[in-house]
Length: 442
Image 1 (cartoon, helix red, strand yellow):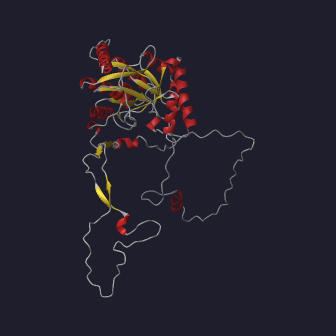
Image 2 (cartoon, rainbow, N blue to C red; image 1 turned 30 degrees about the vertical axis):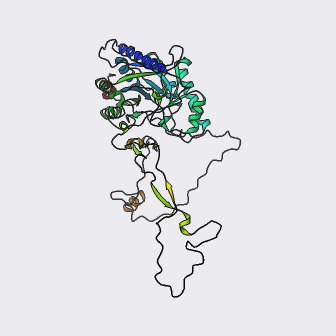
Image 3 (tube, rainbow, N blue to C red; image 1 turned 60 degrees about the vertical axis):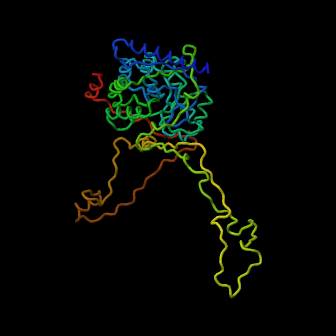
């Protein structure tokens, strides 16, 4: 009991210190700020995020952890870092290794601003749910190596990892756990990777945060809509009484935050209902027994070896003159089995309709490629029809069959490299002058 009270007192003191620091944001006394910082040990809690796992971060009510995926990418990541700095908000950035290699200055700035650096794989393949463990391990380790090399400080990158697309599989999670990495999922999303406006990104984020009350928010720092909507989102969080929590890896500089096991445990409540797919309780209120089922003895079967016994008295036989023989009064199922109701109450979560698009693998068309139209449709003529309509009087000439030769690969040639698989990051188009002006970069 004393340890429990001490732990809660420690948490309360951390919250009070964090709130005071948030009020001292230079240049912006009304900033949202960072309420507190918690240090977690990846070796103690391996899988986080109620969207997929049984544990999430030990947050209090109306606390949110902001995370960004897929970056860094200018000019959007620059703008997001500017907005976070103006509001004194700290976040966690799950970076892609090849993006960090391309923009090392952004990696260094993110770390210098006090944010947490984490790994989101080397190339962001959309096949983590079906690739081999060796392939996944290469993506994971290469991602950590690229981010650490871009930063120039191996100790500046946390051991946090988020699977691209949240396309998990147990074998990959077991590998991450064996290496001491903490696998992050999410508690709710804003769907900013889809083609929605900045206002819609803010609306969905706030709606789901209000419904859940606290949790890990997923955003993407490579999306223009996120850069446009982030100032409004932070203002709304402050107006609605939400507080931002910064998460770091436990170290000598950041001792592990004292928590209780039940603070990590995900508890499904009515607040998880998003109005479309509610959590449906099963089990409570079912009578005991639920129903009675027939036994094999009702059918005159005494064993399964082929022996059969009539249910009536032995030796009874029907005679030619027997009519209207009364049947003895018996119950419907004299030999019955009892099925007992479920003892403990459980809930079965159902997905949000918008989540289905997140796990979908899109088939991309090569740049400049055009889809061939089928002949015969209204207003569409194929080349053969158009040629016949134009040159109806020209005699038909049969050309010789075209002979093509295919190059034969030498047996001594080195093996071809494997084809790239999976969905790569869909980077936004080059920003226009109007967009740059909107997000405040021109």
